[in-house]
Length: 72
Length: 247
Image (tube, rainbow over all chains, first blue to last red; front, side, top):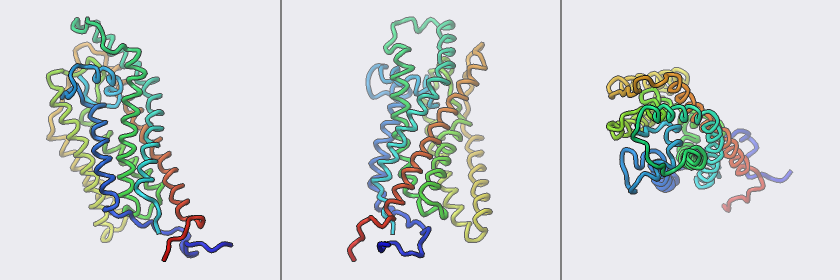
């Protein structure tokens, strides 16, 4: 058997948590992008409107209703 | 040693979210569109405001439009949940990546959807007063944020109590605290009842059930797919074919 870098005693090793410092930049960037996406799917041209007209609202209309967001 | 990277988990989370979104789209299309069409038929027979030409046809709304909304939602939720999984991994009990993914997904379904749903249930077209849309949207997002924050607080509370009460009792106590706090929020936030006179109750029921089916499908498929991918990533990282680190 080839030597493994994993000690033989560690059959089911406890998982070392990922450091929060490592997660932070990903979390900030993803949260920002995801919230913008969710805003356009869930609220744009409903309660508040950044883009003029109703095309965004009408396009995602069924999705907005069925995903549970307040729509009209 | 832990070789799972945040980047690798995030990519898999968004991918699993896309797959979950596709499954949720099928549920939305086959179960949800019926009540939506019934509600629109009611709207058209009771109001003469929507007589003008449509910006987006019903055929597009119920297919491409619906898919856009549900898939984007799936990817966004997938990415966010993958990051919540990164934080929870190794910090909440002795659970592996797959079990952690299942727990985080279940927690996501309950806190992001079910708790706000109980206070502000979704409504089909024709239900809802356009004058209160601003207030309802604000309160809905507030309820989502509150529910997620209270759940995080409950998990932290549970971890603190675990040393003194043991895992089981600490979990029960923290869950009870969460339910109590959510109950208080339900009691003090304003409610809305805007179902128009004569609107069929069965359509409201079917619509709300369909939205619950959609979200349950989305979070379940996400949890299973993402859990599988995260577990595989972990196993691959721990296997001997990995190049040993210098030192």
